[in-house]
Image 1 (cartoon, rainbow, N blue to C red):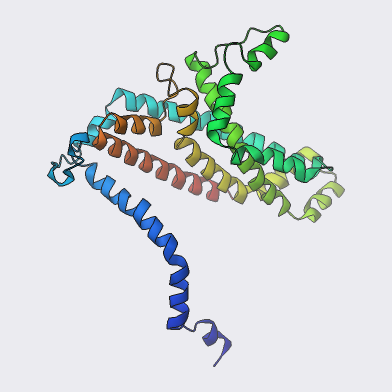
Image 2: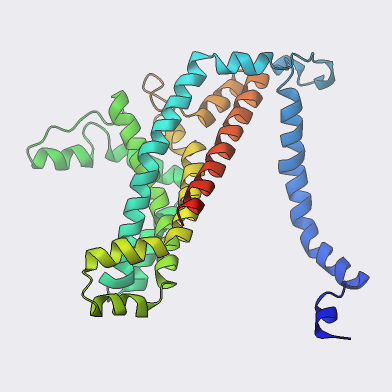
Length: 300
């Protein structure tokens, strides 16, 4: 038997059984808590199900696309969609820029205690969001540490959580603080995969540090950039914890994301609208992900 035949030999029944045994816990959890609920939510998004129909879910009436039409013409949903867009447009570039700067510093600039700095920068990712939100609420109150520090510099601190424009800024800052560590780790992995000989050869040829960054580092970082862009876009599109814990979607709905709008609709008993809104968001996220993948791949 040739080596090619051995490589294509089908696994035995025992090997297949062992493989499916290890995979089965994930499959069961995925089916019970993700796949089946997602299918049920899709079906009920075409009905008029409400909180009164929970005990008799089979007695609902199909309205087809009427629920989606009501969601897409709802002023609250459209406003939350615009707010989510602001989160993405401002938050994703900000988070990626800070993460890349930290990765560059850890890769070449910082020589001592590199592991300590890396752990410190990654700590917000694993920090409990409830505890972090409580600290941020205290820090950004009118007489909190942030405004106190600004007053010592002779500056008038704004109403961070009471002003609509400043509230959305505060939520973005908290979200960026939480996600910067993830960007840093992924960018750092991409930087360490770049051969050092390439930079050395460019430096010998007289290329400045700026040109080496623009024409060597950034092009070779495209795989990491693709991954980080998609992950951060999905994270900001699905943002919920930060606006809910920090501002409850206020003031005046300025920080209400689509995910928070869906949560509030479900709490108000508008179950069909909540399910339809969540699927509208799913479609938008999927389309953005596909668009980003194609744009970044074609630029390589």
